[in-house]
Image 1 (cartoon, rainbow, N blue to C red):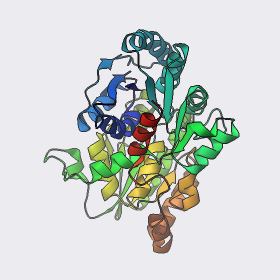
Image 2 (cartoon, rainbow, N blue to C red):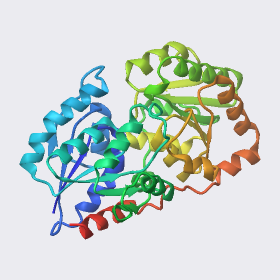
Image 3 (cartoon, rainbow, N blue to C red):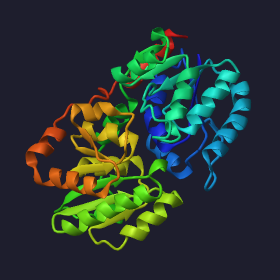
Length: 370
C-alpha cells in the first residue's frame, strides 16, 4: 500500500512525524512516501531535521508575502504530476493549512483516497481562524477517512453528514511528538539566546502570529505584554519567539524591543520550543498546537483569540479565552500570577487531546482500510 504524506508547514510536520515513523514500522505492508510543499521553508526544515525525515518530493513553493490563493494555485499545479507519478493508494494530510485543502482537492480530482488527520475541528465562523476554518471544512468534505482528535470533533463531523464509519477518534498526534521530544535530554548551546533568559523569574511564553490578529489585535496584545513586563519586571520575564511574517515581525519588534524584561527571539526549532514549554510558568498564545501541547506539561494557557476550534482544553479548565483586549489579557495574567489556587486548578487539569498513541491508531486504520 502506497501512502503519500503531504504537508508544508512546521505544525503539520510536527504532527505528521509520529505517523511517518509508524508507517515505516510496516515495510512489508506499507510504502510511505513524503511530499513537502514547503509552504513554510525554514521552520519546516527545522522539524524535518528534528524527526530525521527526508522528503521524497519537495515542491518548494515558499515565496515572500504569498497569499493563500497563490499557495493553493501552486500546490494544485505542482502536486498533480507528482500524484500521477507516485500513484498512491492514500494521500495523508494533517490539519487546516492551504496545503491541506489544495492537496485534498488534487487527490480528489484523481480519485485518490484521502485520510485527514485532525479532522472535525470547528469554530463555525468562516473568518476565525482565517483561512483555516474553511480549509478544514473542505478537506473533511473530500476525505475518505477522518482521524478526529476528540469526541467533540467526531460529533462535529457527524452533524455535517460525514459517514460514521469513516470517522475514528485517535487523539492528537501532537501529543505523540511532544512526549517524544520532551523525553530527550537537551540543554541549549552555550551561545544560545536561551541561556540569557533569567532563571530567577517566572517565565511567560508568548506566541502570537495568526492572520486574524494582524494589525490592531496584535498591537493590543503587545500593549498588554508591555504593561505586564513593566509592572512585574522584578518577578516576571516574557519570552516571545516572533514569526518572520512581516505583519508580525515588524510590529512586535517596534513595540516591544526596548523592554528589558521581554526577550524577543527568532522562530525556534521544535526542541527549543519544547524546552521553553517545560521551563515556563504560563503560556499566552494564539497557536492551535500550543493549546494542545501546554496542558500535557501542566502549563496554564491563555488563548489570544476570540474563538477557538479547540474548546476541549477550555472545557477541561486547562485553557481560558482572553481574546486580544489588553485589559482582559492583563487581568487574567495577573490573576494566575497572584492566585496560587487558580493557577493550580489550571495546571492540574487533564489534557483532553490524547495519550501519545494517536499515530498507532491512524496506522492501524490505514492497514485495515487497504
